[in-house]
Image 1 (cartoon, rainbow, N blue to C red):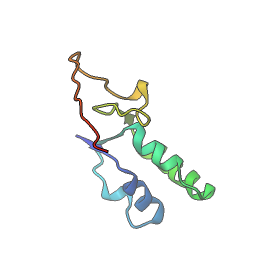
Image 2: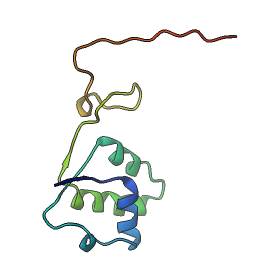
Image 3: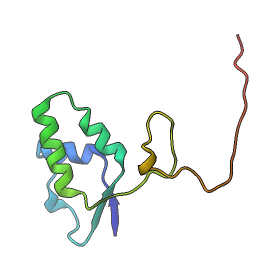
Length: 94
């Protein structure tokens, strides 16, 4: 079974309120670039290093996000679409 790891899980592991012993042994832990990007934004350099080390030791693989958002998504880490172009138009009232 695969489980998605969110940044709060990594924080709880570093803080000690959660242990890897609480996780299933036969599971695979995945993430997207979003979680890694969030951890890299941690301002405290010591904590950032702890978070990224824990992240690296826990996560088995990184999977692409299901969609792309301009300015956030990494082109090599997201699905762009299924080949069907969809557009919405709207008007901003002044």
